Amino acid sequence: MSPKKNQTLGEFIIENQDSFQYSSGELSKLINAIRLAAKVVNHEVNKAGLIDILGGVGETNIQGEDQQKLDLFANDKFIQTLKNREIVCGIASEEEDSFISINSNDDNHQNKYVVLIDPLDGSSNIDVNVSVGTIFSIYRRVTPVGTPVTIEDFLQPGNKQVAAGYVVYGTSTMLVYTTGDGVNGFTLNPALGTFYLSHPNMKFPEDGTIYSVNEGNYVHFHQGVKDYIKYCQMEEGDRPYTSRYIGSLVSDFHRNMIKGGIYMYPKSSVTQNGKLRLLYECNPMAFIAEQANGLAIGGVNRIMDIEPTELHQRVPFFCGSRNMVEKLQEFLNQYQ
Picture (tube, helix red, strand yellow):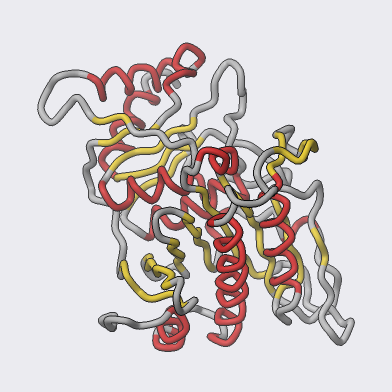
C-alpha cells in the first residue's frame, strides 16, 4: 500500500495491520506506549540544558558506566508507560540489573510480549547538545501464557523479534520501526504532539562512502578491522571514504541508513567481547538494517543468529550498506 502524505503513526499502523503477524490491536498498544514515552523523554531532552537534569547522578549502572540523570528519567518513563498497557509481561532495560516481571490486571499472567530497551543511547552526549536516542526490541514470550515471565523469554535470538525500532532525539525527533515488512520513519510535529510518516520504506543504499568507528581505539583493533579501515582511507575509485562518528549508535546508524555507510564497534584487546549489548542494541538495529536492505554481522556470524546466554551480553557489531559490510567480511575472513 502506498503511504499517504501526512499520515499519522496511528493511521499507518491501522492501514498496515496485515504486515504484523499477530493482532493489530496488540501492535498498536505496544507502539503507542513507546510513542507516548518517547514524547515525554523528548520534552525532557529538549530542556536538558535549562534544569538540573544535566550531568551525572553519581551512580554506575550494571554495565559499569556512569549514569546520567536523564538515563534514569528515560528508563523510568519507558518502564512506567509499558507497564500501564495490558500487553507487556516483562521488560529488560540496559539500566536495570535484572528483568522486570509484569502481571496482567487479572493477576493471571495473560500478557504476551517482552520488551528490551536501551532508554537513552549515547547519553554522554546530552551535556554537549548532541543527538541521543532510544532503542527497543519486542518478542513474543516463549513460556506459556498464564505463568510468570522467565529469563528464557528474554534470551531469544534476534531472528525471533516481532518488532524493533529506535527514536532519535535530534534536530527533529523521529521514530523508526519495523515489524518485519520494511522500515518506516515518522517525524514528531512538536506543536501537535503527533508523529507523521516522513520517511516511508527506508533503505540503506547498497554502497556508501561513510565509515563510522572510534579510530582512537585503532591500535587495539583486530587486524582485519585495521586492514578495512586502511582500505577505506586509500585513494582509489570513490575512496577515501568519509569518516563520521558521533558516539551515539542511533545517530550514527540513522545517518548511515539515509546516506549509505558502515558502522563498526569491534572487539579489541581492551574490550574482548566488544562493547555494545546484543539484546538492547545489536539485535534491534540488526533487524532494522536487514529490513532496510543492509547487513549486520558480529564478525563471522549474522548478529540475529547469535543465541544469547545472558541479559547484558556484549558482542562486536558491524552493520550498514550491504556491499560495505561484505567487503569488511572479506578482510575479517583473512584472519579466521
